[in-house]
Length: 152
Image 1 (cartoon, rainbow, N blue to C red):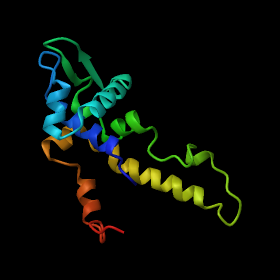
Image 2 (spheres, helix red, strand yellow; image 1 turned 120 degrees about the vertical axis):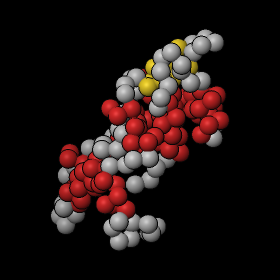
Image 3 (cartoon, rainbow, N blue to C red; image 1 turned 180 degrees about the horizontal axis):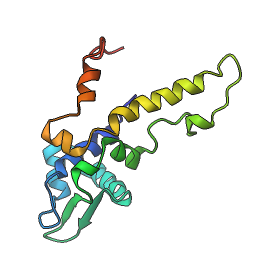
């Protein structure tokens, strides 16, 4: 899986919003400085997150952004889907709709299994988990697997 700058920035911005409420929203400039995200790029990302109903905003001197739902109810997968679309498409198609000719026929199942593996982690890790530094046990189990820390 390749994590784009957009996904990385979106997740970091969302984690930065954990704890912000409608009564004390965070300005885009504050999020930008706190997470070293270019402000123009961040504003576009926040716009997409707002369309996905993951953040809310208010204009004005007391304005800014806050999470639309509790951080425990927003997964990393939710954020990725909001800014990039489905977790695992192949040429823009869902893997379950792919039809390959033999001998490549089993490749569809490989893509489906890869999507399932991504979901197993990304749908289980919430913004609250990341913000608290207390990740679900399945993350630790994956990190303990041989080769988990090696780039290949």
